[in-house]
Amino acid sequence: VAATVGPGLIGSLLVGSSYGRGIILALRKPFRGVHHLEAHLWSAEIEYGVLPLPFIVLLVSGGHTLIVLVKGLRSYEVLGTTLDDALGEAYDKVGKLFGLGFPAGAQVDRLAAEGHADTIPLAPPMMDESLNLSFSGLKTAVLYQVRDIAPDRLESRAPHILAAADFAAGRGLRL
Image (cartoon, rainbow, N blue to C red; front, side):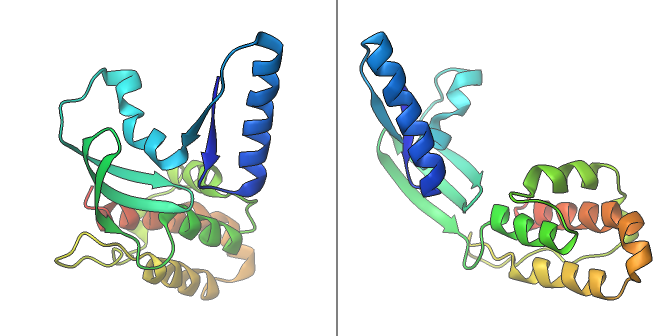
């Protein structure tokens, strides 16, 4: 039985590891603590089988957005990271502008799928020679869009603004 033991939100980590440890007591099986980010790096092997080394991963997980060169098990090189908020944190803050719950990522994605990204031009997040990322400008651009819309029109405009933000984020990630 395995469970994530870090890094991450302490409440989630405690629930997962406590539940896993309860299972091991009942089943008399061993417990393995798993590093959250390392698990993401290797998760593609669940669907695609053994990946040839080295490979590059775009890791987008709640509080982390990284571009990682995977050389082997426990042999990694971070090629790029966020200079401010991770993409998941940016989505949570954007979601808050629309009164969405926390975490907002899934709700932002659902609403964005109903909108048209081309109706609202948003600049992509920071793109320079490095592989580092910045999503603070995207959050600010969305804030300006929300601020300039009459409250009675916000609900109908939300899918389009969120679709534009989602599209811009993808361009920032060079997708």
